[in-house]
Length: 108
Image (cartoon, rainbow, N blue to C red):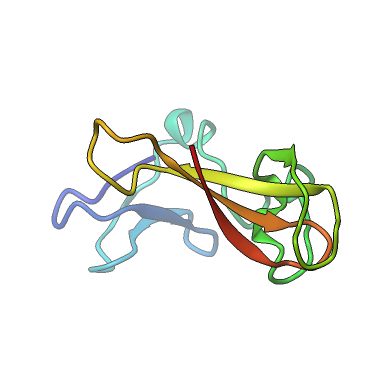
């Protein structure tokens, strides 16, 4: 990455002029070809390694466990653990049913 000497913002390559251009103040500098070869332009990057999920399915990457949902009876739910009380109290587990989406808390 190359940062602007004037304002410190990230610079990018202007393909038309082959110069480095500041994202904020538009300052331009000569492109150093040795250094520029190490840069990766986001225009050329692919998203092959991105995991596609349905909209609203942000919980799919969370760990899951075997627990029964009171609403639908499904036996799998995603969970997160958060410290909701003081440090000497056990953490709270928040569950979301993988079938119906119901949310509930579990206390240790």
